[in-house]
Picture 1 (spheres, one colour):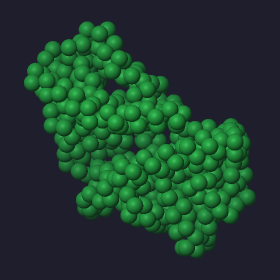
Picture 2 (picture 1 turned 120 degrees about the vertical axis):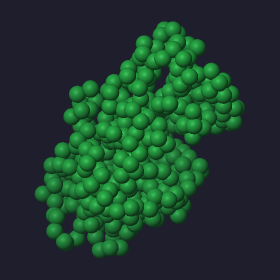
Picture 3 (picture 1 turned 135 degrees about the vertical axis):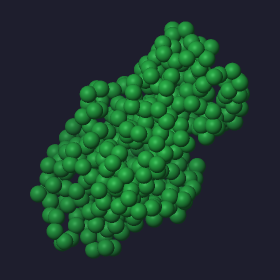
Picture 4 (picture 1 turned 45 degrees about the vertical axis):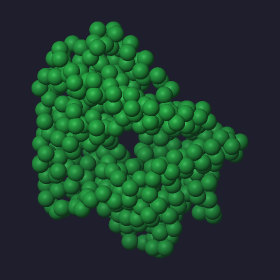
Length: 430
């Protein structure tokens, strides 16, 4: 069992976000009189953080659980910190850590953006321990009092893209050093960046085309619904939903729209801003609309901005994208296809998808405000990895919360993840 007393804490860091965040957190842990360790799993990890406190794992993924378990025993690890809970290495480490009573801290990009990071105990999304009951959420918000959520640390395009490129190209160049490393992404980085660069060059043209399509739809539709596309490799899709590909989502939503939506309504599907075009969603959507015989009422925007769409849409359908939370903030009815973190009675449409097209339930804006305040107080921290000044702020805020053992507090932690069983019932592989 891990030590839990006031003595020296021994914190193990695994893969972090593509930024100096975890290295800075390790320095702070040591400056506060505790010990920090790091296991590097690939060349990109080593590039971000290397030194005497670092150990390299060069074995096969299936052997990592035994390796990290032995490491925890040998170094008497008390705390485990990792970015995202569903990478193959991180799933194994969380299991080993919880078996030993290790305090598990999971980081992710902020649910409130920009200027925030997510920090939860044990897991995220459908395995989050944050309450789902509206009365509990209101109580947390009241107990915590108002949290300042004013915008801070605006994102830098270069801090979003350059560290990603350097990290993944380092893994390509250094593959011989970590020959068994398994990427958590689904595309090889070299063709991915080439495609991404080409799409970036055509962004202005795609945005103009999207704006023209939107103007046309607005001029003839009695009501407009939106399905924002998620990235094919997104863990929110791969591990927190029953879908193996977003093409399944497209087919399901278009068929239901054709069968149940009012005849004068239209459906817009919008590409993710980081999509590189591998799947050819335009053809997938066109085929689905053809088969459902609603091609004149289904439209694909391969560009544009969500804020522009939110001015016109009457409802948003999503698997579990943060775009759904953005829509709720704008007062737009939202139907999630899985128990997303923000899928809460009173906030999202609780009926089936077929009823959503005709009578979408509007969000209770007081409850939405309470939810945002509650998560800001318990599972969000100020700071950003996409802003130079935001990185040290995020590092300090996270370390202070981890060492104080106040993740999800006050009141934001239930022993059993409340979204897990509903997710399993619809086939989510957790």
